Image (cartoon, rainbow, N blue to C red; front, side, top):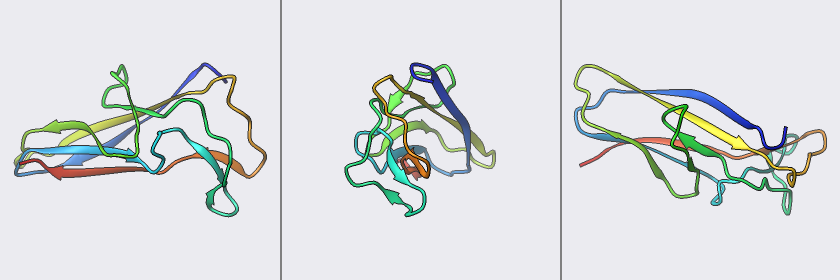
Amino acid sequence: MPSEQVIAGPMVITVMANSPWAVYVHSDVSSGQPREFDLGLGEYVEGGCVLERPVEFSVALSGPWRALEGVPSIAVSKHKTGNNPESVELFFRLTSTFDDSPLPSGRVYGMNVTYTVLPVY
């Protein structure tokens, strides 16, 4: 329903690290706005519809929320865990608008999101 927030998650990432580390997140769409995707062909529709607002992410259900982008952003940065694994929760939020168009059967709005855990030195 337009103007209503849809929140997905949490996606839980569990990390064991012997050095400081960070979780990075980015999308394959530079603007972070989901694009029209053809389920039958398995690809984005050239010149297809794009949602008005970007998907946002947070490590807490209450926020703060940041827009997904095509370049990796740090979701969270932590100290080494040692032998005690630490879990990070990621939430994703989308708020559609009345300017967003419904899609025909077999098409959805989509994007790929990549999560990366890297050591931080």
